[in-house]
Image (cartoon, rainbow, N blue to C red; front, side):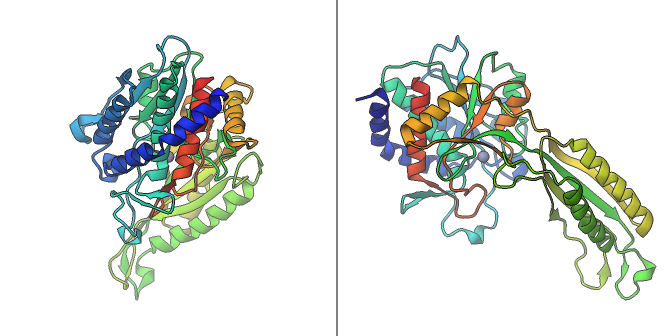
Length: 406
Ligand SMILES: [Zn+2]
């Protein structure tokens, strides 16, 4: 029997343990303080004990301080399978989850895992729980096979809100060295054949409009901020889509840039008042060949024109932005090794893609590290009734184990 088919059989035999670990983890919420949670402390402690239970004892930590989090800590945990001296292959999964959203849309308690029809339901099951568990059991498989490769599996905080207290903090503390490579199993296709090498830039812009509140029966005595903002919103959206219309078919499922008005704050309580203020947001996902600053400049220029024309004051500012790194070169070791592991363990030919979402990979790519994003997913991230397909968790662990064993 080849060593890969031995690993594959061994990982299959761990399925029951993996399901059990996932169920225990889902019952420990890990929502960031900014989203109303306590942070990742408890989940981090659980994962450290799970590592130990499975014979993985070389654990180090990069705890980022955060007064709003439980025990003032946003944990970042690293488990080394080797002696940690040579360049390492890192596997980065995030512990934090988004909040539940509308609780009424959930069929079960989001923090009590339910196993049904080959799926494990619960908040964070797929994003990013599936990969947290898969990476631990892949590590167990290679250790139990007597190997100690230069692999580090890492569980980070704060991914959903920009990673300042997660992978950015680890970078600042010098966790990574020259020659390190990264697997970020936080996005992927349903077949498991998509290896992501590029991400779009993102711009979250806040648009605040000031008019003058008045009685709805006498609009001329005020200035309807909601109406002025709506006109600007519609024009701006169409303008950006028309001007920045380049397509790059590396990117899936949307080959172009996107410019969508999203969140809008509620304004007046009653129907018969004309709102004096308005606030809404744009979520823009921009192909790397465009400059984020050019788009922001256009928004501000058009906002100034609309302000002049309507008398309302429209201000555009940056709520959050991230610049896309250069796509990783697919000739670096991690891409060849991962493609081979996917072929070997799954019998499928992987392809290289770009995505509109953002992951930890972009952050390390910006520092010049090669990073591959890969996993097998049903696209349940952030959805009500989120689930992880048990088969995906187990099959992904097999690919990771093959990758570690090389
Ligand atoms: Zn994620």
